[in-house]
Image 1 (cartoon, helix red, strand yellow):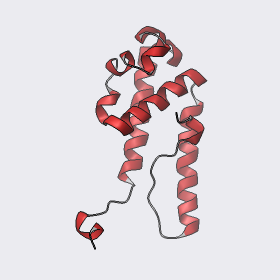
Image 2 (cartoon, helix red, strand yellow):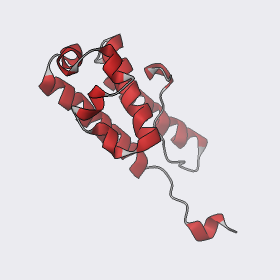
Image 3 (cartoon, helix red, strand yellow):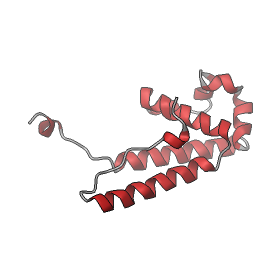
Length: 119
């Protein structure tokens, strides 16, 4: 299982080492700031959501459905899990912010066309 401290969302290569370092440093600080807002149990749930997203795609962000399947469901029922975030609205906000971070990282990830990859 990934720890939130080990998490690094995809970033775009900028072409120069210093620009890439600045960009990655900024993104990593943004990610750390996001995860640091939550306690260890809530961070663990967010990390599980990321792992599910990596395996199965965007359907893994459907709340409350995703909270009802392992491994997240092993931490309690939907109400108990929501309490870890401060309540249902805060849980929805955390998931929405996680999605925004993930989608922003994906937008900045370099795309390789199929034709170029075959050369």
